[in-house]
Amino acid sequence: MKKTLLSTARLLVGILFIFSGLIKANDPLGLSYKMQEFFDVWNMSFLDAYTLGFSILMIVFEILAGVAVLLGWRMRIFAWLLLILIIFFSFLTGYAVLSGKIRECGCFGNCIPLQAMQSFIKDLILLGLILVLFIYRKQIQTRMTTNSSLLILGLTLVLSFSIQWYALRYLPLVDCLPFKIGANIPEKMKPPVGAVPDSTIIHFVYEKNHKTLEYTADQLPADLDSSYTFIKRYDKLIRKGNSDPEIKDFSLISESGNDSTLQILDRPGYQLMLISRSFPQTNPGWNKSFILLYTLAKSKNIPIFLATSSRQEAAAYLRSNGLDGYITLFGCDATAVKTAARVDPSLYLLKKGTILDKWSYANFNQALRPLFELPYQKIKDPILSQIPPVKTGYHP
View: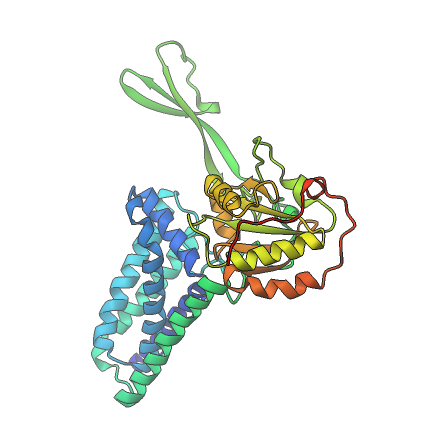
């Protein structure tokens, strides 16, 4: 009985840690942003600059620990490490449940989104399984030689870093984000069909005789008069609905402050959208490839617009390359940009708001062939019609 329990615990813990780590390795920036969300809630934003490093190392350890458990390698050490890690995870998910400030904990990334309560229950189950491993850690022995175990763990280490390196440079291997190829952005901005909205109750907060009193609308006291000082009114969530759209806060704000999102995305024909969080002060390494793409797009009468959460930096980049007035610049919400440009910057090929293809800065050159194969657009675009022949400030 004990042997069966121990073998089952090892199998479940090992597989779950490897599975969870691989999903996160597909999008390490997603875990990094989730860490920033926790740090911001705890007023520890000074750690935001280090979250990507924390994310990469945590993912590597998670996969490595899962493999070590399946191998039974050095369980006296890994049992302690796993116990500390799962207690930490349980604290995070428990905090998310009790505080209500964080709705999703990112345990399985964007591919398998779990609500805070689901994550907390999952962590409690894992805690129980890891406690079994911890109690019987001295009885777990590997059947493999030391060299074989080290070889497997070494390959695991290389694989863990390689997947994350690829995702950070060339976009995730499996795109689980709402801005994936084939998605229609305007449709994703709408609530799901048949969605149920959140159910809330209005609460009123008053002060009387130095006491804070709270009432719902049907509980207001009969003697409510000037002796009650109104403090605030807020909506308390009593049942979570499912009316949130997949794409939230994505908007293209023009220089004049107008929301041009639907107007731009509803244009007929093809468009290119460069989306970026930031621009370096000097010309970035992808600049030459982008200039070539711009020139090719102009020859095909295909408009390009730039969506960014850093409007001033983007404007400076366009000016330094002689592209201001050639490429339309739109401001966009920082969170939406982080979601859409998992690799900064990213380039989208759009048609009527549908994402036909996308590329990271590292493979902008791969966009040249599909762009070259597109037909010349005979659509009169009000922006392109005002653009003179291409002149750029770029000098290789």
